[in-house]
Image (cartoon, helix red, strand yellow):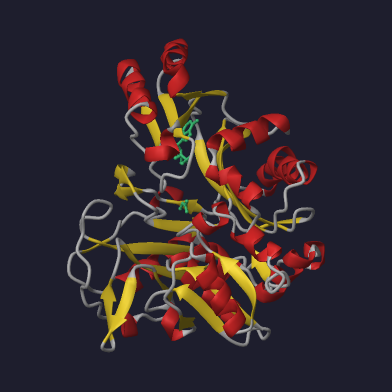
Length: 424
Ligand code: AMP
Ligand code: GLY
């Protein structure tokens, strides 16, 4: 079958890599893709939010499956667009309907969903410009730190955690009155601060059955020791050592099952990945956020550990027969280190030649922000490459990833040297 992956990051390269390994995969397309996906797939330059352009490609290349990487097209309703079109109806779109994607597209919708289905999450109230004063008064009732969340998509920047009450009240006003996050911040969720350890759990669901994928931990801050600005993610490891079977059972019973049943009860069509951002408060898991897609760079350690045929797994998901899939997982540890452009997550330069990729041995290099020009791979984004390696334990996987990362060079390269060090 011909398959299209939408997106251009390390996550999408990892998807293309894993899909291409299947005997069921004939041709694979990535739109828009990067220099890495170009080595295993046909890149097609298009905007993933231009559904008519996606339609044209799908019909022209007889594509039977579309795997949607990022959240934007899902929140924009790409699954419904396909379902409504008589020429596209049979195409297997892996990703939820627009209603399902609201679990990520609106924090308020997600909160209401959790409340309705008894899923543990931080207590909250939401506010708009019309009740700004009530919002300020609500903050006064809470204890610091104060957690403010822009309701809509804000490219991962819409959450503020503040110690000072006056600053929190001012930021609330900035979001509601001064368009701090544009329309994403016209509703703000204020919630209780949860103090604990974060954990990401990934689930694949056909709306009825579910499969729990390997756990992962990502490293969000730019600096070593988790200091400095938030990024898309500077590295990841899988599995997470403290997520043992007892904890996973608790998470399954208290969160995963009620979530999948909630989707069903609410008549939400959901065939795709669900990313649970969790906080362990003592022994109890709480949902911090839902994402309706896989994480990046978590995908770069989660997918390579899945031994089941990914094309077949996704096909069964589409058919509502995910219960027939045996999702075998490689017991080894995977680690990935993300190589970024100096300056990221603030301003950085692009177009730097990348060398040493041919020296990488026994590791997978997933491209994120790269492009090809005259047979030379150039940097083309903040996050440039993710170097994934396997090991019998954390130490081996991480060392191997760093050894290979050190072979790669470009001007102003930067990466954290402490990914996974908290684990041993
Ligand atoms: P989100 O975009 O919802 O994942 O939030 C970004 C980050 O803010 C999370 O990864 C957490 O580290 C933190 N965070 C979000 N909500 C809370 C909360 N209620 N309590 C503590 N930390 C939070
Ligand atoms: N690495 C976090 C995310 O993909 O949202």
